[in-house]
Amino acid sequence: MLKQIADGVWVHESEFLQSNAVVVQGKSGVLLIDPGITSDEMAVLAEDLQNLNLTVVAGFSTHPHWDHLLWHAKFGAAPRYATSRGAADVKAFLSNTDWRAQVAPILPADFADRIPMDDLFGQVSGLDAGTTYIPWNGPKIRIIENDAHAAGGAILLIEDNGVLVTGDMVSDILTPFLELDAADPIKDYLKGLELLEGVASDVTIFVPGHGSVGDAGELRIRVKQDRAYVQALGDGSDTHDSRLTEGPQKDLLANVHAWQTQQIAAKRKSA
Image (tube, rainbow, N blue to C red):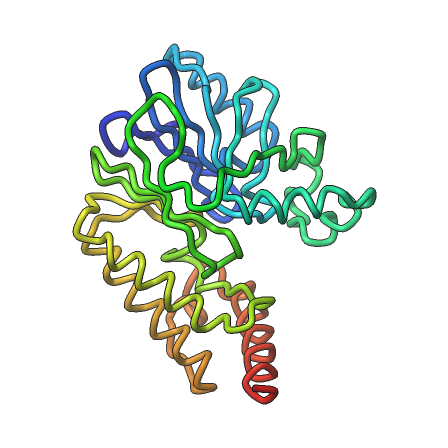
């Protein structure tokens, strides 16, 4: 079900990891950001938009991970955008004839048979490098590119009403997942958090890729919490992040944290 969070902005929450799709109203239709996870959920979202007499005129993928590259035929054939680097990574991946087999092991078992790995998957067009606003007939949406969670990722700021779409950062249910293939994942993530802090004064409400929507005060709290986690990961020190021990995804996070700790330690040793 669509929930309106600001003038002309709605959120649709998925059953999987509280994944948030964002809908932004423009002059001739809506922009659909990271639209969802299962075929049924996306079909419901398309019907909800139809009931509001809203047509999808553009899409945007905040970063090139499978759960942000999905689409449904009922959304139509609107152009779907990503950053230049993000789209290039997706294109390279889809050039593998066995890309579906490569995705299959990472899909959540409880949802795998409901996630559409079809010809619409990942069909995004890269914007020119350095593009600062989404090209569409609607409110100005600033693209803040960063490599914190994924190379070529994007934070989006709807400037007219201060709505910030953060991709998979500042979640209240997930600790930071770093781009471990980067030369310096810790530095990249801390830079991403600095970028969030840099626009916090312009934010009235933010939407993470997974988890609860929050206001500007909550954004600052989560940035501080994520910074503490990332710094502890980089230092090899203990983290006391409550999401690891008390959160709804603590079992998942325990495995991710162990893997990230191992990988960062290996990078630190080889530096």
